[in-house]
Length: 257
Image (cartoon, rainbow, N blue to C red; front, top):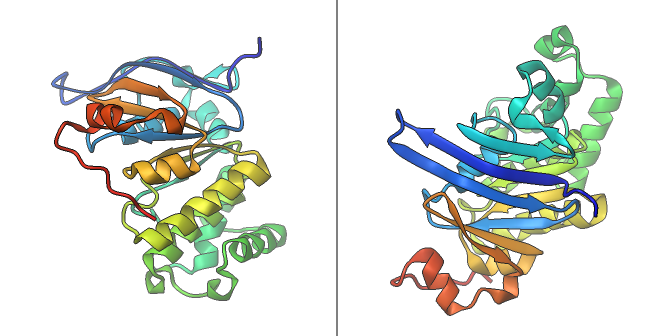
């Protein structure tokens, strides 16, 4: 039986001198090519989980096996190489506002460049052509030389997607990628992630608030509550009772159409 692409084994993260347990012995696996959606209340551990996978946050305990390598045990130098394969899209975009759109997209290649070239921002002509092609792919070729702070929220998130595409990632981590966007724009962003998953074969793990989006785009859903896994299964198997177990008895499902 083949080994899963990503294996989370006993993952624990403790903050504030042991007072806050963001993750509590979390274990699950992800097959290559899945579109996994992580749901749960704010503070349930979704963002911490994603950031532990690429070690933007250091786990307290546990193992994170990515394609056979325990990334939780890698040195900083080796981890930088692994991060080339891990794209990330952030809730607050994480862009350089005063830089142009294409310049922000090009930063997705920094992990492949020698240190001195990355410090000076000396990108190759091929990288520049690829950046423009990725902006074309997300419908922003005409904004290539506009400053990022002139763009709308949805456009800024598309810049983040184009930046992730520059890495040619094997896996994409999307941390609440549509939480600040309106319903129509949310679907637009999710469709780009779906395209990366289906057309490029990128494994996607996205944390979302809206169950309707999770059902529409995920091939599988896991739910976290107080840092623990409380659901793992196909989207269609989350009924009203399970929804209330995850979000609380007073919760009402809000659809995003």
